[in-house]
Image (spheres, rainbow, N blue to C red):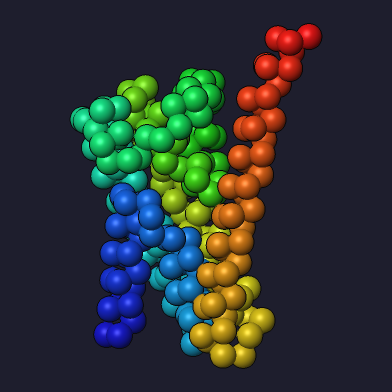
Length: 197
């Protein structure tokens, strides 16, 4: 019964975080997997992955539906749409290859929301989105649970594994965000330098 309650809370946190992207959903899955590792029941880790993937999937469907119905105006009001230039490049990538972009977007910190918005604004077929998002969410939950299991296996106490997993996720997210900002700054400076030449 306690396991079902914990999985229910994990589902709610991840689904909410998928809709309101301020909750560190990856850290929630990693922390739950680190705790599950210390129970020495592989089935519990599988259930954490399933709950995380299902919640991410439901949250993505809600966000996609809201964006399809409400459009860019609603996305701006919800503060989902922040970087118009990045959205244009994501739309171009989605036009070239929809399914691979959806798969990868969940694994890149900060990549999921622009891809969801671009897919909704481009009017990607519901069937394509619904089918392609299943493996994307499953892969995402598996990767983050794997990070949690790694953290749980390094430390003897469950709480140490949870903290290690959460810190690792935050460091990865911040590093990827920093690298992306540096790359975007370089790309923005490139046209200026070529126009001056």
